[in-house]
Image (cartoon, rainbow, N blue to C red; front, side):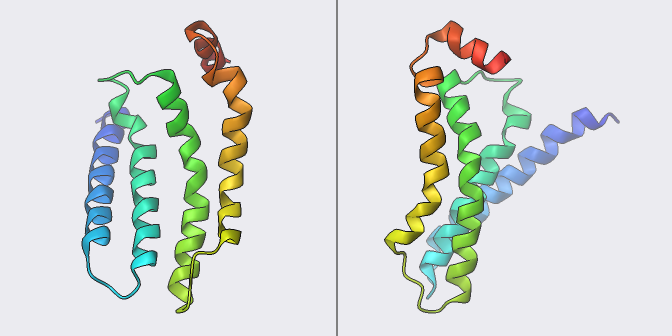
Length: 130
């Protein structure tokens, strides 16, 4: 069997299991709710990130949505960091200093806005091609 045929099936299974586990984490009653939210968001972003292996043969997303999917992978590192921080510390509270982790995403969106998000369809295709 060809490995190219196995990858979409495995990624679909991983994505479905990640979404199911994330839904479970968001609905379960626990003492450490913020920790569950962080790991659930991490699992959802991982499932969205891995979905590229099976949806590209069936649907075509708009270029701006595809770029947001690509850029959303920048959240995975900070979410994992905040999950570990909230799991280790019992007195963890989300503070404004923790939002510094969002700066790389905001910066990349600001850089891409004039060259990609405000460009016409031909410009977006040229951006993806190069």
